[in-house]
Image (cartoon, rainbow, N blue to C red; front, side, top):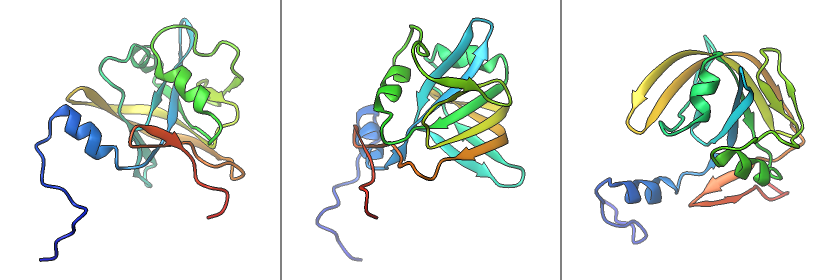
Length: 170
């Protein structure tokens, strides 16, 4: 068996170790949006993944402590807004609890009514089909009803507790 000097010992999965080790997995950043009786709602989310191509399903994982997700859930219609490299401020705004996160922000209603944020890398419109308890989060599975991509943008990335982007040359 080959040994690698840069690999550390096996650690037990407490909360701090989970955050540290899983932080080595680079992810994109999204804002999940929807509308309830009080208007547009949204929250930042980095745990988004494709589940199935046929039928077209995606999933995301809101924290159980989220105050936005219960409001969005009521309509069952969402938009997953994939943030572009220059949207750190948008991420920061939707990562905080409370307040009017949409104040002064450009957005329009998608075909399903959920807010589509301006300037994003991509948008995924979907309808919630299932929720599963998963510790301190919920796994939400949604049926994709519409997609848009903006190929002239680069993604906002999250890695080891910080934000960044791909360089201009790949």
